[in-house]
Amino acid sequence: MELLIPLNLQDSKPLYEQIYQYIKDEIRRGNMKPDRQLPSSRELAKSLKVSRSTTQLAYEQLVSEGYLEAVPRKGYFTARLDGLLPSLHAPGYEEGGTEADVPDLLSNRTEEGEHVQVDFSPGGIDLERFPFSTWRKISRAVLREEEKEVFLKGDPQGDLPLREAIRDYLHAARGVNCHAFQIVVGAGNEYLLMLLSQLLGNTTGIAMENPTYMQAYRVLSGMGHPVVPVDMDGSGIRTDILESLPADVAYVMPSHQFPMGIVMPVRRRQELLSWAAKKEGRYIIEDDYDSEFRYKGKPIPALQGMDRCGRVIYMGTFSKSIAPAIRIGYLVLPLPLLSLYEKQARFYSSTVSRVDQRILSQFIMGGYFERHLNRMRETYKGKLEALLTSLKPLEPYFAIKGEHAGLHVLMTHQGERTEEELERLAATAGIRVYGLSGFYIHKEPIRDPRTVILGYARLSEAEIYYGAQRLSEIWR
Image (cartoon, rainbow, N blue to C red; front, side, top):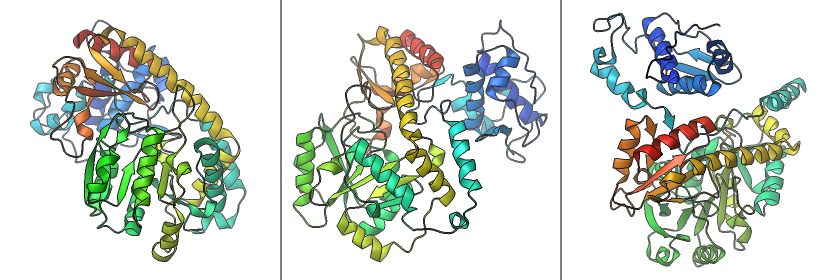
């Protein structure tokens, strides 16, 4: 699997981009056949005598553009592009040609990611510290047990051992009060929201914080729900206007609102619960997607723990805390909705493999999950500190928020520069940042058009330092 890549240390083009360009060209010329396994990022870095972050960045860019495929626990493989891209030997692709020679079709496809050196995406996690050896050990143990039942359909709500493990974790770490029979396990939040839609009825109006988690908005509106965007203040969703809106369900993220990072205080939580209790059939969907990552003080207890009327639907996922590919999320249904679930939706089979459920339950019950979370908190705290330290030259020009929790920060320009200008300037330096307007349900009017989001979870500290340094140079 050795890969010889000629690197020019005198070239102004970064080493990561030289590696990326060489592999991409080899694939398009047909010199790298489909399904060929490449050396690991560690092996390639050692061979080329460069840092691992350099080879990792090149691989990630190639994966994001579709030239490579990352197969968990196996490595990187060249993708099957037969017939999808013109060969570099086709007309217009002379040997040694430049990007200017590439037809418009291909240029449009790749131009956005072509020169991105650091992507401050608020999505993604740090997979370098995924406990591969532990996960592998548990997986082997589960398969060695040779229990035939693990290959049967199982309980529609999810296997009882996993639901009990989730219940124990939620009670101890998040203050959630529930029984295992209230928990429904599903393949990610999208599926769980679609299931909820069937229970609530797709004519039910849903109030959502604005800005918000856009994937949830797309799912709920796509299911036919009238979605009502609600402005926020410093305490979160404005409960003073909820009563006048055509909505009987409120979708909120009280422990750490995405993307604003607001933590809903107790008074506002009580107001929200009071709104829900005033009318039969009102519910609150509490999305607690990344509450584990708090770096100052103790984690904020879940809103569900304050609910005495059975009005909070609690939902969570292991995508941020373990890995997105786990595809395991869960709902905690209040008793009235649980009764409705039994009548209307229990006939649906579980959407999560029982083998994966068994592995995850043992991962949690064996104490591995808690230890993994503690390690990741320290990892992300270190990355956050690296980012904030690197951004200090920009403090006179920006207000920085969200620095105590989550996996991103918000930067608001104190002058007149818009997010479009900030994004454009960053792009000229090979840095990608994200304007806050992309998270608004309705784009106009945007309350603060001078704010950008910087995520740091999937970046190495070296990439964070480099990216922040470049932003400090061009945004001052």
